[in-house]
Length: 165
Ligand SMILES: CC(C)(COP(=O)(O)OP(=O)(O)OC[C@H]1O[C@@H](n2cnc3c(N)ncnc32)[C@H](O)[C@@H]1OP(=O)(O)O)[C@@H](O)C(=O)NCCC(=O)NCCS
Image: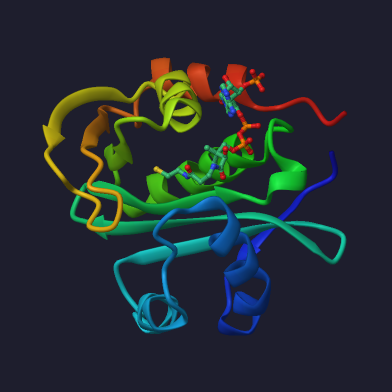
């Protein structure tokens, strides 16, 4: 699939919010997105476009040599077509020159699809945050991928790069 990855801008939020509302039980408000996008340092937000359609988006918070995945979502019509993988790969390629070496995230304990995706990218569970999600009460799994700056990890990324079909 022909995807274009670009910086996520404030004006793109009209595409983000409807996706956010259908894919997350606790969607971010427009205010949360505004404050994240307003930060000039320490954040990376990117969107995947298929023509004029937003296929998905991703966000990272960068602290020293660590980047935390703050959000990742693929529009339902585009799921299982490599969008999230493409966003992760593009994000990692943008983060490496900034000195990022490790990635972390929280994922709902019952979110098998996302956990499967993350395991493919070398994330492993390191802990549980009990009742992390206020609305659902679901626990969160804390996952880390270490040493993304190594040749071994570059090889893994190469293997994960979706073919353009
Ligand atoms: C999780 C999510 C971002 C995955 O996006 P995606 O674009 O469909 O992911 P990809 O097509 O890149 O999938 C890559 C791999 O992840 C795994 N995966 C993705 N979705 C899966 C699913 N529903 N069931 C099982 N495995 C899945 C598979 O191994 C898949 O490879 P395959 O399709 O060759 O089998 C998407 O399902 C989504 O937006 N979910 C709702 C929001 C969410 O849960 N975000 C994560 C919050 S922590």
